[in-house]
Image (cartoon, rainbow, N blue to C red; front, top):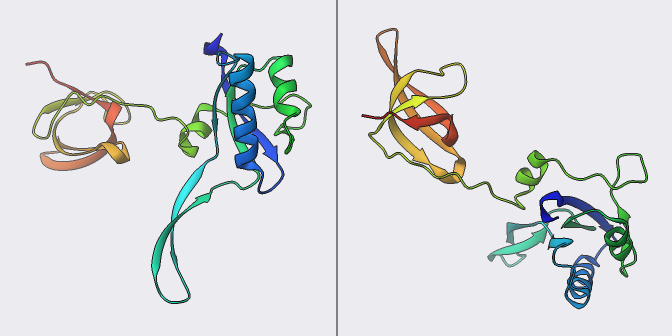
Length: 176
């Protein structure tokens, strides 16, 4: 059942995001709905602010004030529970009355879920490019940046060594 869970955007009164999140968590715990409502998040970002006195401080700020993200299996019961939480004005829809789930790309862009890529190669390893215009080219790993999902590979093209930036999952180790 949890395989069918998708992320939905719940609209709340401004300033009620934390109260809505807490209320949903209590409903889930009290009614044992952990298999229906899997996760509740309020997207946050860290911002550096300069106060009037000139002091610099880092502050957590809501990325989307008035919205709470809920990963759930959409059923009539789950919809009813969320819709009737105090402070909730409804689900975000795309014109219909049915709530619209976020796409996988939107979920990744919002940073609510991370796709973990296991890098099976190191700097200096010989790799084969598996995707994109240079697919099947061989090269040497020059730099790996897991936090940016990037790898720099030096390939030989037209007799020249050329550095190419790729995503981590676009290359694989060449078997020796």
